[in-house]
Length: 71
Image 1: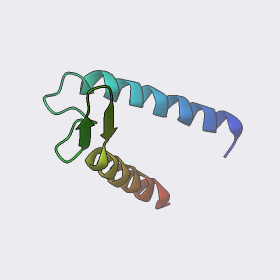
Image 2: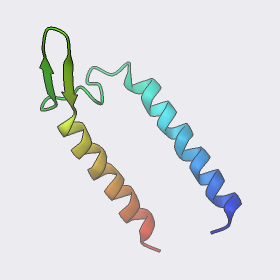
Image 3: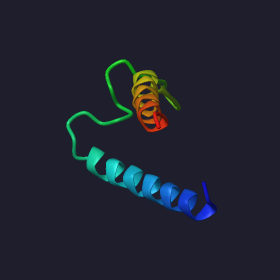
Image 4: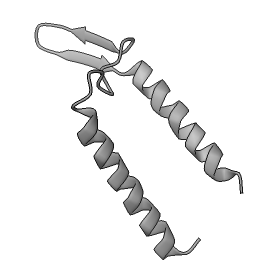
């Protein structure tokens, strides 16, 4: 793959990620705040680990790469 094509693909991927983030703020279920994500609140700190969000993003990316890898 040439450098130009790779840069175009990377730009489109970043554009798509930006659109998903903008639209995601208006949805009732926010990516990163799904049921199953771990949130521990203390007096002066908050620990947040998005377990379910990581699993969902990983499954979606695996599906996309699998679909585009079949050439």
